[in-house]
Image (cartoon, rainbow, N blue to C red; front, side):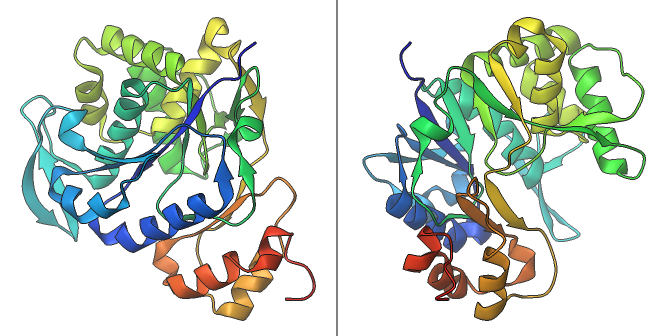
Length: 298
């Protein structure tokens, strides 16, 4: 069997530019075995990101993938976009999810891995090994969606509805995480199923829900279809160590955090709202000892 090809997709925007630059720097330093890295941004940000283009990196405008949506200003600090096909406006988080689906379907690799702008690779990573096996690695945490997580419950229920599936009782399996891998042919099947179930274009069907998760929609579709499930291999291994929230990390704090890295961790994600300085992240993540598992020398 020929090794499946893998590409990366990163949806981004202006406020994450410098984080995206660090992600690209880390990929150029540590990551091999992939075809292309696609950075997908709104048309308004295309020039801002253009310097990141390279032989294996493209910056793609949203208008190349999705119909036009018009900006309609800000509310509570968020920018909103609107189209007659979607009813109420959507904001940037929605658009990034739609762009993930659209970019996966539009590119040619067999599989894609998503790397958010605040992801930083810090160990040698061969994508042919990590995501190029016979079946697509399908991250999930069994029974992790329950009444204590109301947002996840909404996303999970809407995933079933948009796919035309009956909504089962809780708890539900979760498929959300960093460095998620998707199969391109599966995505095309998922988008077709959405259009059949909702009677309109897939992107408008999702946007009209407003409360949706791209990863839960994909994961729910795979779980409900034996043919799609046969292309995947369930795994609870998360390849990225993530700092979701808490105080700003200084060098000592980041080193302490990275000591939690296990052999299956190839990258870290330090959420932007922690305000941890990018130079601190670069210094620690790119230290020689980081690639060797953060030896006690640090």
